[in-house]
Length: 338
Figure: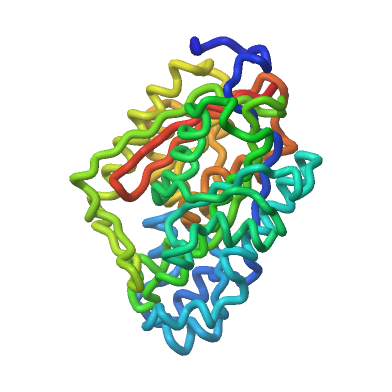
């Protein structure tokens, strides 16, 4: 499709978004809590480096205090929710917004940074939690999974897809955080998003443009080894995130009106996002984020911002969504409000 055509005819879009939902667990990890863990950090240190004030976790707070999650194999038992449960909670909101029932879903796609099972596909576990009897598979590209999923579906022949597809990004990555390590403990929060898309049924949002790019030689810069802790080369990853987000945003701007679009970036940390906006000349009123309140929620971060603002958008609005992640991979999505 040709860029800069707004708002567009609903029939111009290969994929529509019919509803979105989000879920964050109740347990709050604020900066005062992390300070009390005595790991060499405090509110000033955290805010100065990340801009994050609070995060949510599926883990029991007493468990973090007593164990610092030193053995991540114990984290599942110390969790108040499974990924299937948080996925189902987000999906129920998306279904309600779309006016659909679980029985309407013909395909479930999931993926993110921290699935609870090597097999089966997390999509199947979430589908079972919702009582959905439909095919399920995972499209996984770490924090870039949402862009990867939309890119694959948008470029799939519509006649091979069902009317309604449920995408779930269940990100309860605090289970992989070493709470003895201040550099990672301050970043991660838990959140889950659900998105219902259709190749035929018209919805409030049109998926105008998608893309996904990878540099596999950098795969080892961000990783979660099986059964292990999240680990990254922090300075290299932040530089990569700022650089590639800027490049992707420039590409997306060929498909939006530069003066009127909203920007939603990967919710890694607020200072990184502000740096990207400063370089791109994006005013504060056009920058949407929630990382300061929820931390880095991986693949669920950027779509959760859109879901939380679901009722705030108006016809003709454009959303340029940019994500970066392990792989190293980065992607972009343009959404138009119809």
